Image (cartoon, rainbow, N blue to C red):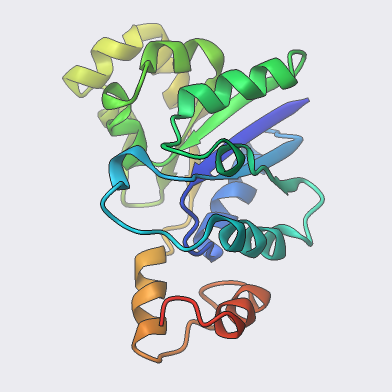
Length: 205
C-alpha cells in the first residue's frame, strides 16, 4: 500500500487541504492519504490552537466522504511538540510493508533543513512536494543551498520528478479564523459540515 502522510494544524481544515490531498492521491497513485493533526507545531508554539479533539473531529467530517482519506490522532495522543520524525518512525513501525510519502508544501520543503533530524526523515519516507500552479517552482526550490546540501543531487531530482501540481486556491486557515471572528461567511472555503461544526462550537469567535 502507498500511503501519503499529510500533517499540519488543520485549524481549521479547508478546501485547499482537501484539493492538495486529492491531487497527491491521484498524481502519486496513493492508496491512502492520512491526515495527521499536530498537537503543537514546532514552529508555531507561540499560537494557541483550537482543541485537538475538535480539530480531529472537523477533519473527520471533512474527509468522511472519501474512502481513501483517513485521520490519525497519533500526534494528539502523544501530546507535546509534534516532531515529524517521531511520527514517521511510529508510522513506519506500524506499517512496515507499506511505502510512505510525506506531503510537503513549498514553505515546509524550504524549511526542511531546520526540522528535527531531517536526514532521518528523508531515510524514512519519499517526499511529495506540492507545487501550486503558477506560483511555485520546486525545481528552483531544491537548488537553494541549504536544501540542496541536505538532499543531494539524486534526491533533489527525485523530488522534482515526483512533484504534485495543484490549483492555486489561495485559501488559508488563518483567513477562515479571521472571517469567523469578524462574523463573515466561510461557506465554500471549507466543507459545509465543518462550517456548521465551527458555528455549533463557537470556534474562532
